[in-house]
Image (cartoon, one colour):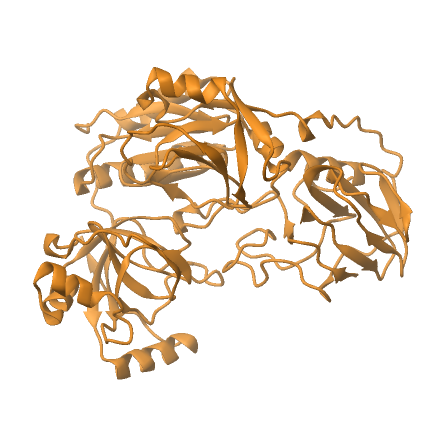
Length: 281
Length: 243
């Protein structure tokens, strides 16, 4: 078992998501940065869908009550085990009473903690991903006790090597496809989209990232239609909204761009004030 | 063969969007639901799901689509081989709604702007039979068609930060029930004591696309009783089979 001493700013349990329930209006959810979570699980020899802790901007502090293996990935939040700095993307053995904590955010925005066998929290609709109204909890709080698999003492993957490319944490290029309503845009609007930068507003969370700059917009709303994480909507005010993993299942604004899957991971590591540039793929 | 000619577009790495003409109609709905079912049967485990809305289906594949032209052709063939919509089994659900002043926060704005009495609003709202087009926005939020034109009311200029679970509301030419607390800009005229979404049930929503809904006006006293029955899991929502 692992005890949450401090929950950080906003920390949740996530796996790859909840699929097959959109007909009831249930969002996909799942880790914002799939690359980071996948790396941490792979290094531990876990299943790719094993649940991890997702931390936003500020890390958690955990006390281990058992022996196990962990791996941290994604943003660099200066992780420390019992006060001693440790590295991301490395498998570490921990023992009872060890304390894992985090410091300053150096790079990226969301970091992940994976544990051998994954966190064994409640499964609702085939997924452990926290989502209000679907799981009982919607974020970790102080005192939470998280169940993990019993450690057998054999760590076959402890020395696993995996070259991790971390460039995506810092690049500002966001690769996109044309969205379903892209062709409704004027030439001037299309130029504006690809020839200038956009900055991330203070409204950015697991549901969506709103961008600050408004562009001219005379498009009418469309009939409510399906959207996906990574769909870029053009709102009546001319501002762009990039939908993220917890986004609603349908929307009524023109879908002008669609992020590549890898670009969603990239955007998930950005925060307020940072700029991005869309690049058509 | 159907009379529509839907369009097919790649949406992202793993999804293809099928679209019908930009209009809301029951003919399109039955075509959409018919094709959705055919796609699910034909593609099986190769898709994660086929999601429908008013006039579109998003087909989400399990794997990366390497051959887009082939995938689209396959979908077109499924559509073209489709016989006319077999009327599927649908249900008419009778949804209790309490229009008491405690809940109907915005009903006066509607009565004043429309020159209707409160009773008129309740009668017009509860005599109509609505069609469930799809579930979206929030878990358990039904997109309904069939609101009487006399009740069309623009969304509020400033949305409420918090709308109560069960709030029955009108926004533009639509009406709906908020399945959970949420921010929202629709005009609230009542509240329903039943659950529209329950993640612990095998069927998290009682209704599905293609079903019908009718609102039944209940008193505050009945509302409280139904709410208690719902809470203890013994309330049976009334429904009848329709073709």
